Image (tube, rainbow, N blue to C red; front, side, top):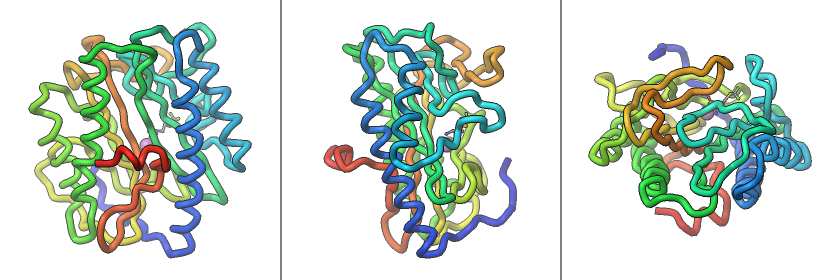
Length: 262
Ligand code: MF3
Ligand code: CO
């Protein structure tokens, strides 16, 4: 998991393609966010997501990835990630739903996730979503050239743990580029090692998965859906970022989302 394989540095030309891939994905996410409401099925979200990805000239990178059967991972309530969309799962007022989506554009992958409330949700659920989102921003304060990779997870941990939430340890963020998953693995919690030094031109998917209760998770029999062991809600927030000479560039943030930036 904490391998020593090389972390790729993207050329300026590749970075342009990453930016474009990520911008298209940010639009897909934004439109999906607006579509979320009580009464729709998780398959409706997948169907719209795939349509939007293709309309924009992208290819869904999750579809058939190691056999995953859909374009958008839709995970409801206690489902952490990799929920499989289905006609039978109808979103209800008070649910929270995590949408994880990615696409390939001119050979370059993008990956991002958001958790939304369905209609009116409890203050508890809404705080979980907000803390999960903020933990990403706390983490990437350290996503700068010269810093060490595992400082990101350390900062996420420092921010999240005082809330009493559990940080999922079984899944991590990752490098991204011509493949969906590249070196390095990026833990969302504090580890004892410092990790490799960050350099300009690295593109990373940073994706904290935060549980209301225990950090422990299980896999359902479908082989994909990850759920919390205690059945409590879980939230997910992910962006593809670029390491630069100064602040990281958040490539999958939609224009409309930038307004609410930290
Ligand atoms: N964003 C997810 C991740 O980084 C991608 C899911 S792959 C899929 O793990 F096959 F589940 F779609
Ligand atoms: Co990812």
